[in-house]
Each structure stands twice: as C-alpha cells, then as structure tokens.
Amino acid sequence: MSLTEQIGWIILSIALSAAVVGAIWIMVHRYRQKLRRAAEQWSSRPRMSDEEFLKICQIPDDPLKMRVALTARTVIAEFAMVPARRLSDDSSRTSGACWDSVDWLDILLRIEKGQT
Image (cartoon, rainbow, N blue to C red; front, top):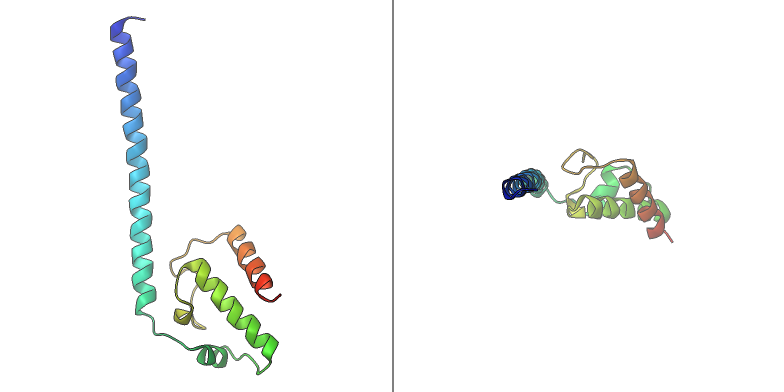
C-alpha cells in the first residue's frame, strides 16, 4: 500500500470517527434538553402531602393499602427522578420519563420489595 493510500485511509478513519462523535454529542445534547424541560415541568407542580395524596386517590383508611399506595408513589418518583411530593393523582407517565415494559417490571418489583 502506497503512502497516498495510507493517508487516504487515515483521513477516512478520522472523518468517520468525527461523524460518530458528532452524532453521539447531538443525542446527548437532545437528551439533556429533554431532561431539563421535564425538570422544569415537575418543579412547577405544587407539592402534595402523603395525606392529601391518599385522600385524592381515594385510598381507604387501611394501613396495608396506604403503605402500598405510598410505596408505589415513592418508587415511581425515584424511577422518574422527581420528588415524590410532586406526584399527584393526575401525574402522567408521559411527563418526562422514557419508560418501556422493562421499566414497568422494575417498578413492580421495587414496589413488591418495598412491601416486604
């Protein structure tokens, strides 16, 4: 292989590497923007105490049901990376988090673990 061919391959390798790094940077930048928007949305929501949450969700005055509801609220908040007191009965799962079926399984297992 001649020196010219080697230089051509080196330039091509550098160009491809730069394209990959650029694409990754764009993806990370867009993800961070999405996280910032979600954080702004969640921070503007009013805080809700556990008692208010249980009342609005119509959870009966049963210690087990109350514990399950509050554990679910805490686990979902941890998963969505938002304060639990910002979650209310009308919080939407589309409010910032990217969830799929594996994520739901993780949430269910965390709630179950929190009950033991």
